[in-house]
Amino acid sequence: MTTGTESPIALPRHSVPGVRRRLVTLVGPAFVAAVAYIDPGNFATNFESGARFGYLLLWVVVLANIVAMLLQYLSAKLGVATGRSLPELCRETYRRPVVLGLWVQAEIVVIMTDVAELVGGAVALHLLFGLPMLTGGLMIAIGSFAVLSVRAAGQRGFEALIAGALAVVAAVFLYQTLTAGVDVGQAAGGLVPRLDGASSLMLAVGVVGATVMPHAVYLHSALTRERFAPGHGLGRKRLLRAQRMDVLVAMGVAGVINAAMLIAASGTLYGSGAEPTLAGAHAELAVTAGTSAATLFAVALLASGLASSSVGIRAGEIVMEGFLRRRIPLYTRRLAAIVPALVILGIGLDPTRALVLSQVVLSFGIPFALIPLVLLTRRKDLMGPWVNRRLTTAVAGCVALVVTALNAILVTQVFSG
Image (cartoon, rainbow, N blue to C red):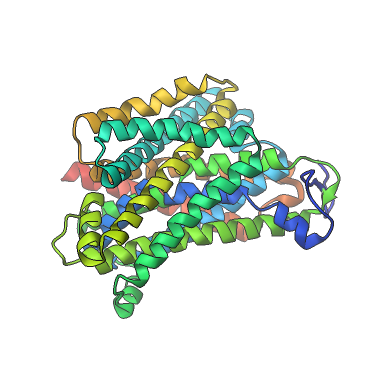
């Protein structure tokens, strides 16, 4: 690895002359990671938060997305600087028992992510076509393989498809926010940090778990590793600028979508007596905004489920390859997620409740991804000129402590009743 102030990084072969045009060719990995931040789990936590507490937890959504920007940037930088993914570096850095522990919790995170995506996609198909939940879950599983097949034809095509799904969800919720009758004053009040009892705390942790996605942190480092390799090309400063632009735009879009979800839910469902569920939101939208708005909601949920499910499959591959240096057939890995999701759908468990609980579980995986990320990106011997500034390390370390403390409080609340 070059250690000068301007480490050259190879550009993709299809890059063209001109700094600005070359920077555009570097955009993409963050958009794939960003889809994980608007998956069906986000729909469930944001809509339940808005339906039950109005704008109260809007500050959690905004703060979580700011944190996500920092984490995804660090992950992207790690992949470019070292040419390895976060799981690979963990395997090379830590003792075997630690690596195995990190792998087990990462697999649980990936499975919970896949469960949320399959359940959410099944709900969307049920709302759109009246399909049984079990049938819908199987169709989403099959559809996710179809989306992944695009990746075999080229990474850029896969990134474009995922970005298209992100655009669909963004357009739907921006429209619904504009038509929801937003109380600007109350929405601004939702930016003031506060909670309202244990229920709001659990939802706040769920929002964090749905927004700051551990599997996306693992994945992003692999995406940038695959895109760029040491060699001649764009200098370090310009590549860093491109990575920042990629993360800021992609995660900014995801953050706006998440905020729009909660605001739309607050304007449509809060105080209406409607059930704080995805089905309840769909039904209430049909009454208050018309069938077109309700249909758009279900379409956005379907696009989210399909796209994020494909991203989850890829993240699972990265986790196993990185931590264990092992690969298993894609269909075998998919069964590990399909079976729990189908059990949930088959026994008739409330889908929205299952989605929220899955996001709470995901929040427990955040420190296990974040702490190694911070420790590795602060190492000068590993990162060279890409090493974190002290302020960056301090902020990221504080984030890890806060998230860990939130989870500890949640555990205490659950076991104390």
